[in-house]
Image 1 (cartoon, rainbow over the protein chains, first blue to last red):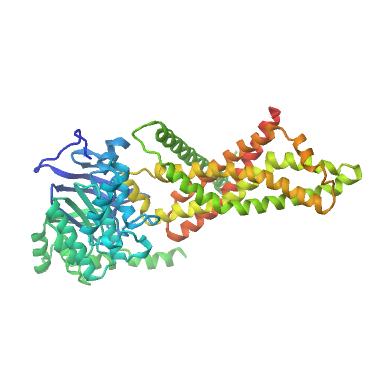
Image 2: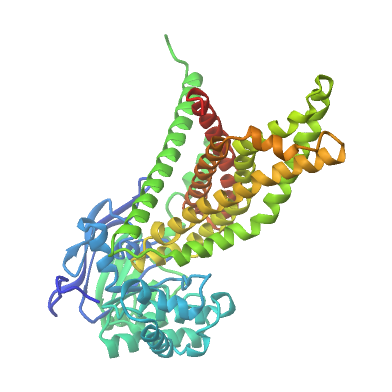
Length: 288
Length: 271
């Protein structure tokens, strides 16, 4: 499936390198000089509150959005310099689990998983059928093969989406909020799957999430994104130390700490409360 | 001459509209180009797969449901034409010319145009809703991420299918209009004898062919507008609703405008 011309990444080179990424929507910088590297085989968890830019970052890494400044390298190659054909080749080397699962609703679960195999390989129908069964078994969904996406639950949709994402045996897996909207048990099951895939198959994983339980379960390293800036990238143990330690008085660390602990008071909420409150109120009166 | 702020606002408004109109036309042209490129590559390049199966699936989806409606509407059109033309022709003793007129009007213009309008409601709206829903459910992104080009995978089969369907339905429609005219003539005793013969004497091949040429273009317009509207959906269910409405509105405008252009061209070249 992989061309001999494809770049192979050695263990000490990063598989993904994000350099000084800037993305603006209507002049507002959603990503403001973000950098990140992900090494071969590791599980990187990108955390951050709603609207911090983590999904935007993910979309740049899969080549569905293009940066205003900076660039993203996959397997040592700049995504924005690739031709469409080259980009499609790169896309066959990674899989994505979308937030909603993003199954094709007009196809059965089995057909969804079979689609990348039918389109990108020359395998015959019987072989594809076997692979589809194996992939579905891997996510515990073999019995749902002939069901339509509308007939299965949210958790099953995500697992089916994961089966489709791993159909072509990707080297990188991207997960967009894998446990959002799932009950704790299903969410733990998905986490287990993520860990299995990375442990057994050696897949490099990038997980975008704001579910802290899940993040600490699966991460090798973690990255904290806030208001379009990368606050900290470190091993999981360092983040655990911040979470479990006392407040330091240093703003960035305390901000991360509040996020990790889910406290209702701290720098994040203080920032929201201060700011332009007076001007908002008085400004409205002044202009009237 | 000094331009007042208020006037400038108006002038800018006109400019902005013109720009957005141009942008829309440009987007359509790009989509047409992409669709043509993928069709061509699908047919002639061994590296790109072309799925006749997907086209056939869409033909069934778009076409089968529309057959009965198109037939029904066109019979009514024939009836209306015959009933409206008979009284003014009667004093001149020309009632038998109803067959000739219905033949030309039906085959050249009303067959293709009414079929296309019905299809824009049927096929166009459903294509826009389907693609729009796929955008909202991240399915389009998932396609791209699976290295499947949405234009090749979704747009090409729908455009080809609509093209084929509109041609087939137009052939049916032409005869249904003629049939409607005949039925009306029978009922009001307006020279039904020799109706079919007179129509056949009147009709030339080019009446039929120019009608089909227009129908084909209408089909491409409808499906391109529907795909364009569907793929640019933003903002959930509301966006999908807007896309279906705009598809029908723009399609009908585009069909009538294209018909006017065609008629002018056929007039100039005496076709």
